[in-house]
Image (cartoon, rainbow, N blue to C red; front, side, top):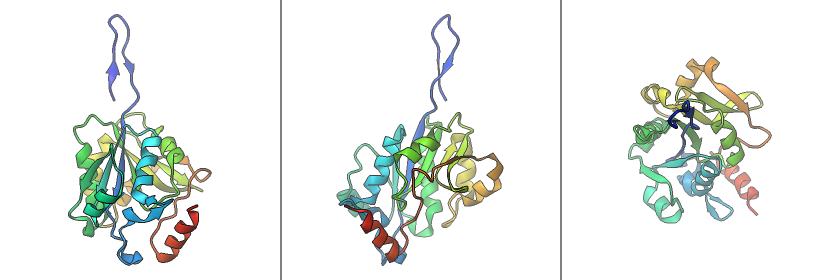
Length: 213
């Protein structure tokens, strides 16, 4: 977190810089191999909606990690203004995407990463903003809560990135790291403004289609 200082006056801390990190590499195996980033919502790919929610929720920048059908996603989705990363190891699971995304933020002056998943279209800008607002320093650790259960988005202060990356493997992502530090995570209830349901199966996809006008 940066300080600004005027001669003769005490230093005043600026707001921490929070970047959005959108994990959008999944191949949709249980959806017949349809990449989750390209699933339609209101006529546009899910990845666009998720990236827009991070920007509208106050993230200073948005890094998007692609994997399955990355070239097609780049061609069909409007991700202008985002840092778009290709994860060649996406079949190994979410952990590789999380490591790649955090590595892309290292050294950028970012104080925290707010991690969101592309297949949770019910999580919008209001929930993002609530979690982002919990960032006080690079030591912050916070997450959305739904009826008392921890969910996404999750905020990792920069001091946690190395530990998260070291622990991330397979489809576990940061689950083990967060479980070991459960008592230190600041939670904010978001069930009144967001739906954390995943799009994993054809039935989930039908519910997604019913959300469209």
